[in-house]
Amino acid sequence: MLSKSQVKYIRSLGQQKYRKEHNVYLAEGEKLAEEWLQSNAVIKMIVAEEPWIDANQALIRRHPDAELLIAKSSDLESISLLQTPNKVLLVVETPKEKAKLPQSGWCIALDTIQDPGNMGTIIRIADWFGITDIVCSHDCVEAFNPKVVQSGMGGHLRVNIHKTDLDGYLSQTKMPVFAAILEGTDVYDMPRNENGILLIGNESKGIHPQLIAKASHKVTIPRKGGAESLNAGVSAGILCALLLPR
Image 1 (cartoon, rainbow, N blue to C red):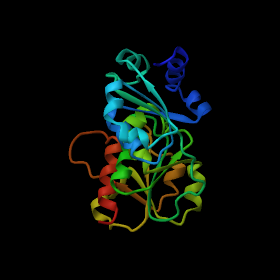
Image 2 (cartoon, rainbow, N blue to C red):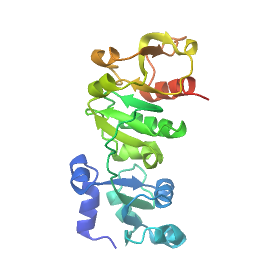
Image 3 (cartoon, rainbow, N blue to C red):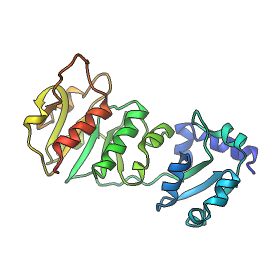
């Protein structure tokens, strides 16, 4: 059963400073747990109700070094970060950030994305389109925030997430940079490209002017109705579908 100290530790991982201190993050819920346990992720702790543990012995055996803790539903409710607590929660080691930034293929660059749901959605979009790298400015929301992990739907297992000085990265890259802005070229008039960096800006302020200046192409999704703008995640998905090679 969960001890008071274990409950306190898991609860603390809802805060970024403790995730950084312990170099771990949370993956919560049956769907995420199944995907993580099928992967090569380093699982530090499996916290679950006894019936779930009994039904998933094969997955649990894949991670013999993980600490296995039986929890009551009330325990999971007390440590859960979801509105509706699930039957299982994992504590996972945060992967080391790859030192080399992408210089070929396609990647998504994010300038000051603040909403965890948007960040998670964009990670999921990258995973869908086979984009293996996302490059974030230092002031983006933390990629391993529990809400980001939840909305990323397993994308964290396949997408490398980098944090860097975007200005410096865009200044030195030889890849074409496609900045998503309202005043850009109609994306339907642009050819598909074998490689490139799709630059998506902050939810309310867009892309910083100095980064727009680094773009080789400015692109927009044509507006037909009266909406002021598109959600950052929605924009990223549409632009990936229209710019990447089939």
